[in-house]
Image 1 (cartoon, rainbow, N blue to C red):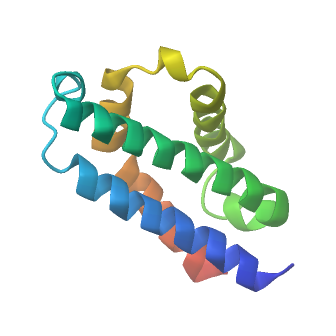
Image 2 (image 1 turned 90 degrees about the vertical axis):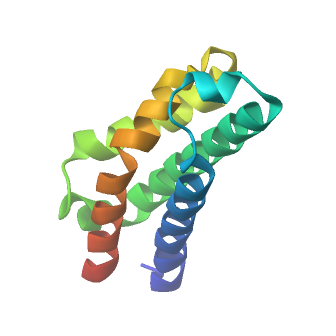
Length: 121
């Protein structure tokens, strides 16, 4: 497997998490995404990065499924990829509270797991 592309995907995911965290740091509730143009811009930008993480994981899973499975089960990675599919195909149904929840409760764990994937590569 092409290790340079694998590491590029991993680094892209880590950079996307960093950008999401920077954009999200002053958001205190899902409603803050909806109450101003700045909040809507952040919701759009964060949603795009969540989608991009899912796409990168989808490609990484095709190339390095065993590497991912050393860190978490198939269901964990599948949920992230399905989130990408939802954003891609149902963008008008994106819920600000769901994006808030992902940013508040899921990204830290994902970052830890991706760093572990990187260290196992």
